[in-house]
Length: 570
Image (cartoon, rainbow, N blue to C red; front, top):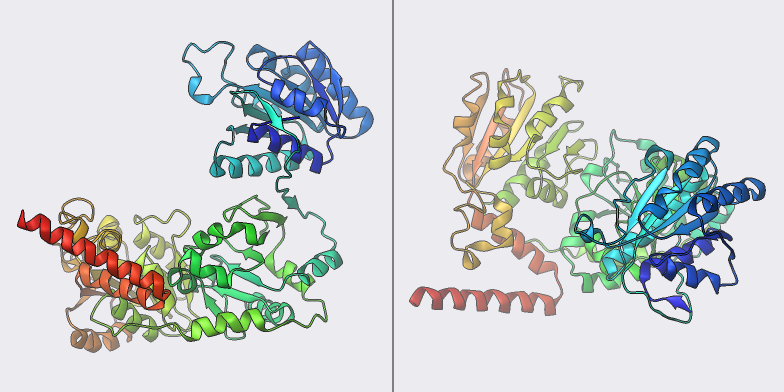
């Protein structure tokens, strides 16, 4: 029988899958759930040594002689302290020792709990990896435990690791041990095997995260991969991948116009992710369907980023190297998956535009010259350009890593420093973001720099999330409503040429000047209404969602409206 606690099951399952046979066990309560589970499992060879210091040294000697990783386990508190000398010795020799230390729940620390000390990082620099495992009482904790144990057991090839696991109720009710997901780092991949595995998937989705600079080689490789494996290549402008040679599936569109339920029809059976962070909500649709696909991550950092909760393979190499290797095939792919997505994207519907941030960004983005540099601030400034047809040669940046409103102007100025001053560079920003970083306008701006500031006198994202129907006081504090013109902000630098547009006609007249050559940097402020901005985006989403979900949303809005009116009458 195995312990009922999930973190114990995960440890045991992954120890098996990583080929760990030898376990040196010392008696105690906190580790008894693990001890009894492994002592009755024929896949393990167990040794009983009462003194923890001796047990750790015994494990070290067994590791040296066998050439295999060896685990050793003890209860909490001072018992775990006795492992330090052997772990220090193993660190010097880079031996694969696995310290499995039982612990009590973290919230009991320093609360007069018996036999409990702080076991976090207790072996310090002598361990090449440490993790603290929660009990695994819900799906989030289970997912976390799976990732952390995989990371630890991968790291043990570089020296000793500590897996510190929390235990409370100890019961043995599980007859058959579940098999939990192993994550394999492909340090030396067998490319014939990789190509064979790829050929078994019918629905491959390649997600291109943020990358720069642009790579024509990667663009060509992705096009070739798409043809040979029938893969859909999902990009946004911040991927900086030229998609003229393949069907560009827009990360933002595909996610925001579908509910997780709608996404089921388009769900891949393999996701390959390259690049860095991406903003798109497709990650939530994938998480909601995570049992239906495997995830391969291709990145030089080799990190176990398991954002979709389905990671199985990590390739710690450049994307160009990966696709060069797997494209060396005569594979003939089915067009079915690409056709499915093409039909979806060909039928994306756009609302009849009112003057709003949606229409403004459409007009500006479509007019940006080839080979320009563009930096967008977060949320709508990042979201809305991806619905447009920006020139593929434009290099696009955004602070997507932390997705913060602050510092976007300064980041753009830094990006422009080594950029060709004969080419245009653009910042697309909202009012609050520009106000945040306004002191940077005191810096020297060159004549080819352009700032589009869309001013709706509030944090527009909060009008999308809440609306004044549900929160009449929305602009008081949540959306940080204000009455500041960006003209006043820009006035701190008299070298900036200022243009203002409050209507579509005024914007149409301003765009040629904004794009043309000038002796000064230009700031174009366009005044919009936050409610209208939010409304246009909501209509766009509604037009592209399933009929049932759309009707549900309509009914929800009507009920809200009725409730607000009733509240006003009272």
